[in-house]
Amino acid sequence: MATRKTQSKTNVSADELKQFYRDMLLIRRFEEKAGQLYGMGLIGGFCHLYIGQEAVVVGLEAAAEEGDKRITSYRDHGHMLACGMNPDGVMAELTGREGGYSKGKGGSMHMFSKEKHFYGGHGIVGAQVPLGAGLAFADKYKDNGRVTFTYFGDGAANQGQVYETFNMAALWKLPVIFVIENNQYAMGTSQQRSTSSAEIYMRGEAFGIPGEAVDGMDVLAVKAAGEKAVAHCRSGEGPYILEVKTYRYRGHSMSDPAKYRTREEVQKMREEKDAIEHVRDLLLSGKHASEDDLKAIDKEIKGIVNNAADFAKTSPEPALEELWTDIYADA
Ligand SMILES: Cc1ncc(C[n+]2csc(CCOP(=O)(O)OP(=O)(O)O)c2C)c(N)n1
Ligand SMILES: [Mg+2]
Image (cartoon, rainbow, N blue to C red; front, side, top):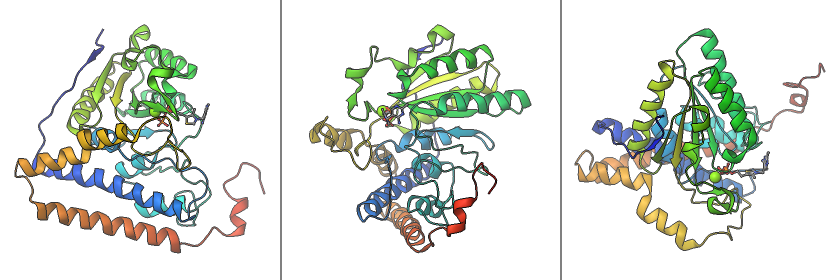
């Protein structure tokens, strides 16, 4: 049984380190902008920000190959940006405009990209887990060597359908990586209050699924663990569980009063564990980049995010006729 707890390191080039910095910063700045637009009343409905968790998707995308699939929950903007979806289209979907990924009719939790193999955006907690196994089943059937990253939270990990999925995925040796993004909270409920065993990565033992816990604030450790999981799945050995220990800095959603944890707890994480600061330090201390190099990246990202916000404000609202498209009934 290969269940264990590691904090692995990997050797990366200066260019890759810069790319990690850039990709994580894009998510952070995009989410900050989304938060601002929400505050201005330009985004309606639910909006769950990913700030703090950036190293999870950026590290795992670095372990993925073209054609691999990903599916996640409602906290999904980071996953979309990390797999290369266009920030303009994501932001315009948040504001409910025609130029959005779902033509302005889906919003934050309902975006998809066939081109980037991104299968959503799911608002029902845990629902994406069996769907992710289904995607992997199709790949196994086609024998195409692809792997599916199925992301879900620590709260979702207590759901029954997750274990029905583990059973079938193990039985059929499906090429699926179950990525548990353990940010320590499910809405306002801490892991200590909701979860009998803190070692969620061991939850596959009964099914013979190996699991591993990873420091999710360290993008290099996430990438290394991702590569191991991908190699396991691609070799036909079946599913793998990665419990990625992370933290969200913002509330559960934009309407969260955040009374269940102290400001000091959040501040401590930001100061001591921030994933972007970690890579920034590695770049500067290793002399792989100068302050000016990083400023140039910051400026480039600011430009991309400002353009996305402009696009999201100026793209028109969907036409009335769009009410009758993309629906099951024949209008
Ligand atoms: C089946 C179902 N039950 C309850 C909810 C309400 N709900 C939305 S998010 C959430 C918490 C999920 O926490 P976690 O899985 O840890 O993900 P995180 O929000 O931390 O990313 C709950 C209970 C829901 N959307 N679906
Ligand atoms: Mg959680």
